[in-house]
Length: 331
Image (tube, rainbow, N blue to C red):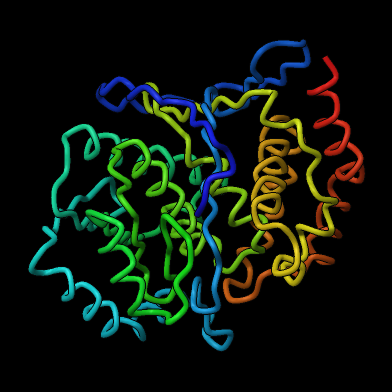
């Protein structure tokens, strides 16, 4: 992942309060001109984008296996080898976050702030999936996150999986079920990347294989989350939507990603998810898509299939998305 901006908006550490689970607030759409737009997840301060470069071995699924649990069993020996490479330098921290989520965190060192924030955010993120998808999201999930101490370590671990180095800050291997995160000398940056990769892991476990624009859009959208009283807050600013996104069928089509600007593809995917979450009807349409994608965990919908599904529930999706972005910048 690489930055799209030369300037970074600093994030103040959220208050470290005890988690209190409460009902989600009704979704509201703010159509009045203002400095910021409220979205259903309350407040998100979106920092510059961190682009995670995709490569063939990432998010691996065997099309002949329609169980991610079976897939992880097949990769268990490789995962054990990956964990063994961490033994001499990285400490293993184990957490049972709730009835369903188990977190294995590997770090050379860790601040109390990072530990508490990561646990709080992952718990709230999983709860959000449960609210969106119901009981189907209430499944046992084991998360394996490695927070590398420095860039050299990150690249060294990465080299075990590919001979082609890429510019990234984090990566999730779907088959191995392990994510590597570059610490970047910052708790907040590492938290952001950790949540980005955790979204990929939750998508893989709860939904299965998903179109790239959905997988990356969700990760980009939630990576700047904070938690207040157990609820997710996200705030984004109008000046982040000054660029016109790609047409839907361009960034919906995974095959076009290799020929288009990766930064703008991530931006377009993020903007589309923000658009879908900003209205109840659109959110219900997104939930319907997610539930249909769950039916076959090993096969993601094509661009045409995705577009057709949304057209069935929301025929004005494309023009509304375009006008939403334009209207936000008309004041």
